[in-house]
Image (cartoon, rainbow, N blue to C red):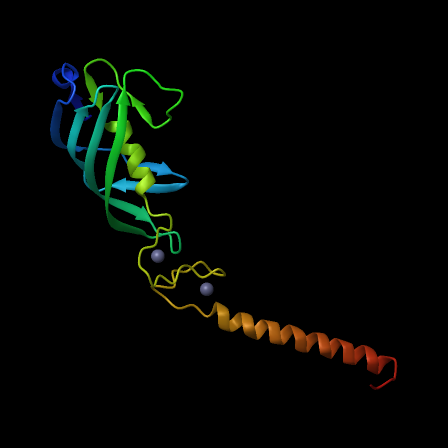
Length: 179
Ligand SMILES: [Zn+2]
Ligand SMILES: [Zn+2]
């Protein structure tokens, strides 16, 4: 399903504007290696105005997403709200890369909404502020369980140093010398 706005009426008159409101369902996707799930359609409301040279889209959108925590890899829900502020033209403008191209008498909002949504995603996706992440040694989720990796690792390091000293002592004894 798409969200297509008929702009035939506002194209006839500079200054004309059309308001719209609706829900745009989007499919779950993988973006930059991380899963983005859509728990609701993207609710978009705003207007498209004919300013002569191009159309201007002004809208506000909100959606409930399921993201993946960068620290513990668990899914978590996050509500995202963002603004759309775009220029629309029938032909591409090499001087203005911020122009979205539309075709005929209607504007398909899907690609525009998606682009603004991806820009609005939090850079650091974290399930909660105090997320402890995964244990780098055994991979367990430290928010849910406490492993003994840190402890046993400290022990092993001490143990290694001791055994090396021991080996050194043995060598010295064999040569019959004491330090
Ligand atoms: Zn987390
Ligand atoms: Zn561990």
